[in-house]
Structures are given as C-alpha cells and as structure tokens.
Length: 255
Image (cartoon, rainbow, N blue to C red):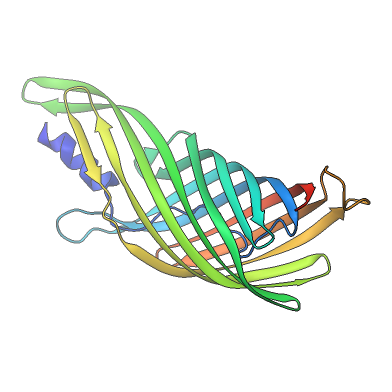
C-alpha cells in the first residue's frame, strides 16, 4: 500500500502559496455609514511546486471563491468584515467539490489628503475543497478498489497596504501585499489514512483595482441603502495571478 501513499504525496502536497481570496481597497469602504453588505466572486491561477524528493514540475492549480460579506464601521476610518461562502480547487488528479469557506479582516485608513488616502488591510481566509475517487490498484493479492476521500484545508493570511484615489463616483486603489498559507491535505482510503502538511511560506506581490458608484440614495441620512459600489481587482504574486469582482451596498445611516 506504500504506492498509494506515494500517489497522494506526488499529486497534492506542495510548498507554494496558493490561496487567492479577494483583497479589496486597503482603506475603509463604508465612508461614514454604519454597515455594508456585499457579494464577491474570485478566481485564481497558480503554479504549485510539489513537496517531493527530487525535482518536481509546477502544477497549474485553479481556485474559485464566492462570498457574501458583511461589514461594520467602528469609526469613519476603521472597518471590520466577515466573509461566508464557498471555495473550489482543481488541478491534475484533483477535481475538488465546492465546499464551505469563510474569512474575516479589517481595513484602516492611515492618512487622508484631498482625494488621496493611504490604508492598511489584514485578513485571513479558510478555504476547503474535497475530492472523492475510486481507484484500482494491482497488488500481489490481486486487484483492490479504493474509495478515497481527499480534503484540502487551507488558511490564508494577507497583509496589504497602499493608496486609494477617489474622485466623484470613481475610485482607484493598489499597493503591495504579503501572503502566507498554512494547512494540510487529509487523504482517507479506508485502510490507509495520511495527512500532509503544507509548508508555510511567505509570498510577496501586488494588487490593483477600481470602484465605481452605480447609484446613490436621494436621502443620504436614510437608514436604508445609501449607494451601490461595483469593484473589480487583479492580484499577482511570484506564484499566482487572480481577479475578483464584487458589489458593495453600504447602509445604516451616518455614524
């Protein structure tokens, strides 16, 4: 059965940082309102180097994420947010299901000067994807069918900083980000159970995005929805690229 363990190790255990949750503006987004609700869709393409003996080629790994997020403003410069949704992972030999994913974080506006501001963001995201297969292995005793369940469970930490420029309904943002991932792959074939840890590594890169205000409430003091903001962004690191789109609805009246 050692050959089963070797198959698991070659296919799935890697050193690279390969989560790509949406980042968003590094500065506070609610702009004086109390709450915000949003939907986000993200996709990433990543080269993964496997953690095996000898040289191993990079594997093209795809991630999809969909979130509903809820934000709350502590002050006009400080937001907290919670994401709830789903993630899915896919590469050669692993076509994961869509499973529950969640995360949380904060944005803080450090400086403001006319149309420009500078902020910092910190967040973490838990991404899970499971894959079930039935494989046949030829052993000395004869053919053996294995019903195997693999679960990829990752926790991604992101720290980002950069400027935001706002003018009228348009905002542009970008900056530098630092990302690391921990987690494991658990493989259960009934008679063989294995767990492979992901080596923690830091990965640096950048991001750029834009926001446009689609509509504004005619009564800014209302406790209903104050405006609708459409966001699109791209991200890149040494190992991966990704993009996301989202729609934010601030509401709840002024602080």
